Structures are given as C-alpha cells and as structure tokens.
Image 1 (cartoon, rainbow, N blue to C red):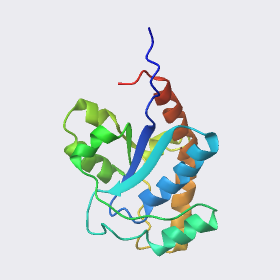
Image 2 (tube, helix red, strand yellow; image 1 turned 90 degrees about the vertical axis):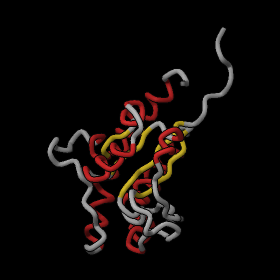
Image 3 (cartoon, rainbow, N blue to C red; image 1 turned 60 degrees about the vertical axis):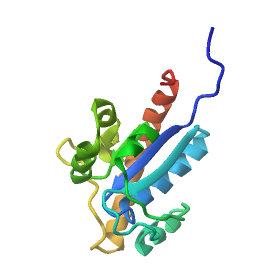
Image 4 (cartoon, rainbow, N blue to C red; image 1 turned 30 degrees about the vertical axis):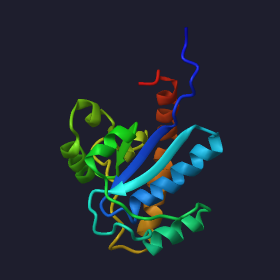
Length: 169
C-alpha cells in the first residue's frame, strides 16, 4: 500500500552574511527557474547576521535582478538553528557562511543539508567555491555574482529533482 498523500514542496534557503546582496539574488534567480520548470519547491534566503533584519535587498542587488528580468521583493532576516528542520537544502554563499552554518547545526542530519552554492557549478574549481561579497564593490561585482549564481542554478535544480524523487521523510 502506497502513501497517496501529496509530497510537501522541496525547500531551499540561501545564506550569506546580511541577507541583502548575494542570498536574495540567488533566491530570486532560483525561484524563477523553479517556477519555469513547474517544480514543487519553495525558495527563500537569510543571513548569518541579523543587523539588516527587516531591510530590503541592497539597491544594487535590486537593480541587477531587475536588469536580468527577475523579481526583487525582499525582507532580510537571520537564519536560526531550528530552521534546519524547515529546509531540505541550506546553501551557503561562501566558506565563512558554511562554517557558521555547520557550527549552528545540531547533528549530522543538519550538516548534511549544507552545501556551497558553487559546488553545484561543474566548471567551478575545487579551491575557488566562494561567491565574493559585492557589498563594497561596484555594479560589475554584482553582475559577477549574478553570473556565478546562474552557472550553479542547473546543478541546484538537479539536486531539487533528485530530492523530490526520494521518499518523504
């Protein structure tokens, strides 16, 4: 006898420092790809720090997203330890975020959910998996972040498809 109840959506969150530049950009890019493919997935983002909680995305993030045809509505928030229960995949934007998330993880199950964004980019070099922080840079740096996110998106979508095929926990 099989369980006929609908599977819950696959849940992904991106995590950067203040949740105003890199992670909201990744959120909006992946959300569009998920919607375009009709995948039952929910995508959001947060930061390791809470000093920008309640703020919108950085104006350069908004400008970059809009220039590429993406939505940009966003309110920053801080990632909390208990949220590991709410997500299937927690994607860190750089090694520092990866370390902070691993320190927050309660057990191996939580740690298994954490990945670096560029680990999904087959062209990324093993020692160069950070998405650089564009906050103190110009628009070109934000464009570079967009490019890195777009390169990783197909791999993340494949991970979502794989996760959706697994039996519900």
